[in-house]
Amino acid sequence: MSSATIVCARCTLANYGTDRFCAGCGLPMGGVQPDAGAAAEALGPYEAPEPADPDVERTIHAFVERSGFEIAPAPRGWQATVPLRLDRRQAVYLGPAGVDAEGRALVAFVSVCGPVNDRDCRILLKLNARMTDGCFAIRVLRGEEYFVFVENLPVAFCALIDSQKLLRRIADLADGLEDRLSRGRDLY
Image (tube, rainbow, N blue to C red):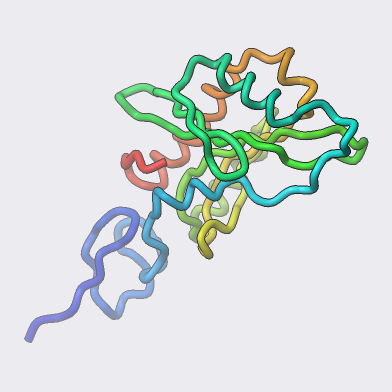
């Protein structure tokens, strides 16, 4: 008599069909399969800036072009693909993020790290406690929760910031968590 096994979505370890959690990494069985295409939805809907605000789309496009990284249009913004160590790559999505409490137009920088599970939420909160810029968060992409790295800045700052340095920092942080969550896979 053979027993049914379920392969873990994160570490690919075969587990018994009756197991509630993966014996290798603790992911709840039946958890989300990583969906690399879900990252395209990283930029969500936003509150439109006032008509008097600068041309947000043009400023964001100029910022991402200045970085020198491979760029492509993405839903609601742009995707910059940042090359990293060990032939890894990380996509950072840039787009309008509405306005802040002072009415300044914002640009969102979002990079997807991997599917959410309860065990890794503690890791995420501990990492946030050490952040000085940006934060790790949870976003719903294609109906499933994903860990993401998010940073929002006033659009006016885009002309003052080194775009390559900022995008590389965001990509490094997001890829570090992705590497840990996916046991070395490079999906986003």
